[in-house]
Image 1: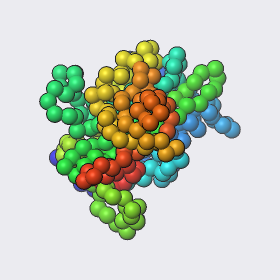
Image 2: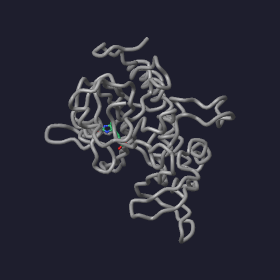
Image 3: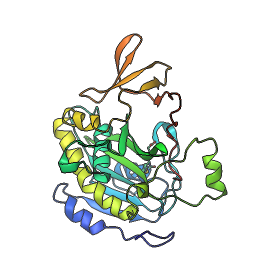
Image 4: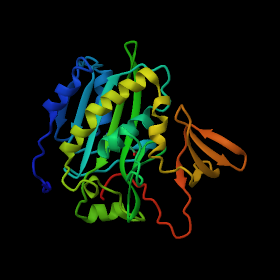
Length: 299
Ligand code: BTN
């Protein structure tokens, strides 16, 4: 069943609540037809304001449409109703070390959307959903590697606790190009990937159901054990491993996986360095299609 444009989406809010509430006391699910940004809204609710008490309880907020979706590094995240899944999960969290949280989230997302056989690394052939450090999901097809999903993790302090907002945007299906999206596409080598290239019948609601309960378990495992237990799972989908990369400061080298704290290991002219925060681009090899890392719309 392929969802037609403007068909109402039946969000599995109750099923998700039933699966997650036993793990996260006080958990609620809310679906809004439109909001500026689910991340911004959860931060506003956590902080409270004039006449509004702070809300530190765990909350899953899904928006059918975002008018001002945000990506990493101040970029915009554009999406259209029904063509993408946009949601945020907010909850109090207190890991000993926050390093690698967004990588663990990426692993959870990739494994939910393309489960590894028998819960292990892919024995035959590479997985089609790869992880591009630090937290993009890439879809690999005959058209090359294209961005499938992005993750925006933000934190805030208040009332003696730290609250994390995990925002996720997944391109679900291709959209018809109108003048606006044509303009948005200008300059992009290849449009981004979308989930229906992998699962033709999967809509945003089904993807949400696949993603959220596992995501909560992942975040709780991370809180308890940190990133180290996720290192091998990242390696199984590491889209940069062995490739020539360039960091945002211009440093060039070859990517060599991630450390047990989630730092990217890059072999440079000056030796092996561990990078905790940087933009990384793949240096194109002769004849290889460029990877499209552009945000959001449309695939
Ligand atoms: C990125 O790749 O730059 C991260 C994109 C994150 C987009 C999601 S959509 C739901 C949530 N709300 C936002 O405003 N952003 C995140």
